[in-house]
Image (cartoon, rainbow, N blue to C red; front, side, top):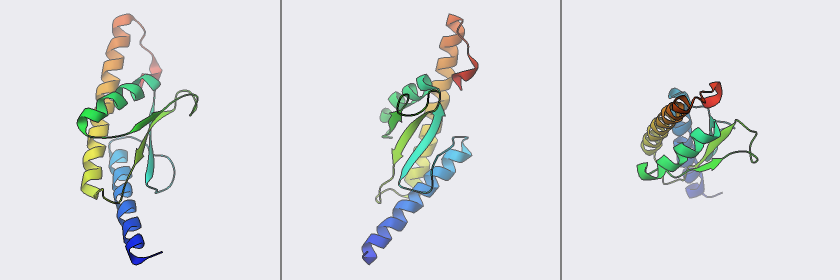
Length: 123
């Protein structure tokens, strides 16, 4: 309830809003209301797992949530914004996430095509 607490909440929500907006600009939906926890929908579990694996070397920490925690086919990344994150850092993270998702989708599509398993749900 202190002025510092109010400032920290504003900073956190500013970075979370920037993260949500930039993820949306990259075509990635975020669930829930503006909050420090940002669930970004990936959909395909294999794409979500590969995205998650490829985020750490990019400097982005995220959890992957998949069935049975969320409904099958609605895997997502759980991102946590902190008061120390800036809107610029959130934008950089969103760009890294979008690139990792795109790369994972391409890799999964290639694997499926090579094995004859191409599926419409790979996106």
